[in-house]
Amino acid sequence: MTTAVSQSVEAEIRAIFKSNTASYEGINPRTALDIIRSVVENAILNQPRSLQKRIGPSEIGTPCDHCLAAKLAGWQQIEKDVPWLPFVGTSVHSQIEDIFVQESLKQCATDPTGGVQYAAENKTMVGVIDGVEIWGSTDLVDFVSGMTVDWKVVGATTLRAAKVGPSQVYRVQQHLYAKGWNDAGYRIDHVAIAYLPRNDISLTKAVWWTEPFNREIAEEALARANRFAANIRALRTINEEAVTAWITGLPRHNRQWNPDIAAGKECFDCKRFPDNPVMADPFLAGLDQIK
Ligand SMILES: [Zn+2]
Image 1 (cartoon, rainbow, N blue to C red):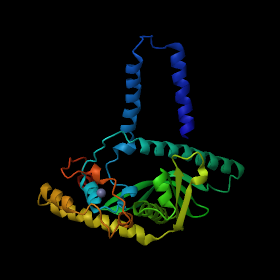
Image 2 (spheres, rainbow, N blue to C red; image 1 turned 90 degrees about the vertical axis):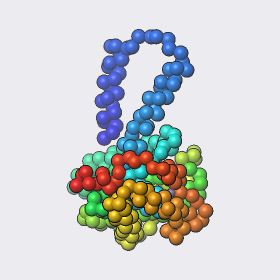
Image 3 (cartoon, protein in one colour; image 1 turned 30 degrees about the horizontal axis):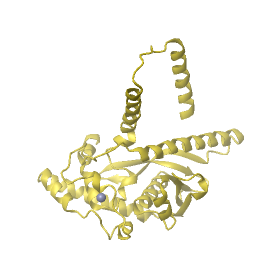
Image 4 (cartoon, helix red, strand yellow; image 1 turned 120 degrees about the horizontal axis):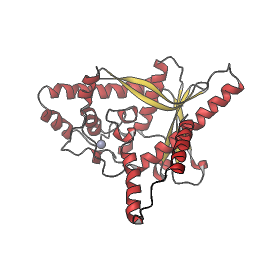
């Protein structure tokens, strides 16, 4: 689908530049490169992914109490840099989405009555936090095997760690998606993560992890987020400082909830939620708006 759109846009642009090319000005090449670079950087910073304010399935299972509460309360995430690695990940996702759209079209052409086996990047409602539906997009659903698959484009360290199993936040994300599909009436019995190497010359180093769907994992994570949201709402009736003080006092590395941190890993989000919060679009306020 994305291919069809980009092809027609490409043809349009090509037609315009053939008939009307901007005049040569001889701009200094370094200046020109600065401009070109800023085109790329601005596009990345303004991607929907970078602008996402509301908590999503990929964040609900964060082992860090501090970051979960900060996200729910609507603290602005401080991006110190252009999120280049997420952009690489998003780009790979978009190409793989295309592969499975083409595969489904091929299957339908071969066997028009067989139905569609794969759904790529389809939205599902994973649960409710503070009375508001939380939706997320599942990278791939295989209806025939009853399995969801999530692509993770990862560096060498994560790839190595993946061999003993996923992090808590990744694991919760998968069970949330599977819960969403089951709730919507599609039978999903398994969840999976494909860890695709970002720095390897071959896909043979990819790690393909799967486990049976466990609704409790999803429910437990939603219940925790709901407890936090209720706390924020209660404290907000006092004032915003009460909310900030509570979140600031929360453990940034909750070892009990987080097996990864027990193993010595840090919460990578902590540095993006400093303790003097800048309010973005507050989650709970944002929820009120759409009700
Ligand atoms: Zn954190």
